[in-house]
Image: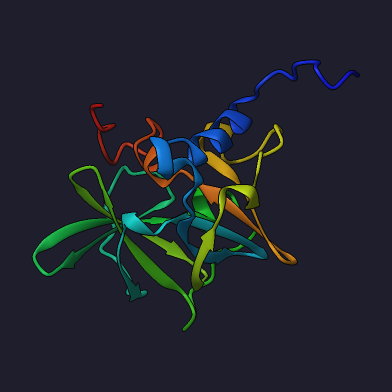
Length: 178
């Protein structure tokens, strides 16, 4: 293959490019992601979507909702749906212990909580630390992934949390009008 041969752009590769896309200086600016664990894997979401991190409390169950929607909690007068990401991503087991937390997100005009195993830290990633996500059959659609963040010996699966939470199968939030 010659150096000038074009490689087809995959959805995930296009999303990786989107992470670094922007106007002028923004294309070279580092971005911050909140790192969290689901099972043995580390994921990251845009820190600007995070409202707060809370300890897990059993939500009030609702009838006729998907299994991954655990129910709702009352957060200072706001009724917040709680999504268990371990169930959404079809991980082996969803156990609730003292490390389990809820990341409260602002998605569009809605507040949504997502249950994760633990939160580790906030990581700053430069555009050169982002790698395209390989295409494969998985429990999370490729267009819901932004990129793989490479930090020393760590790899962070970067999730487009707005796209995931506004997807039709979630039924939680209307997509933002752009």
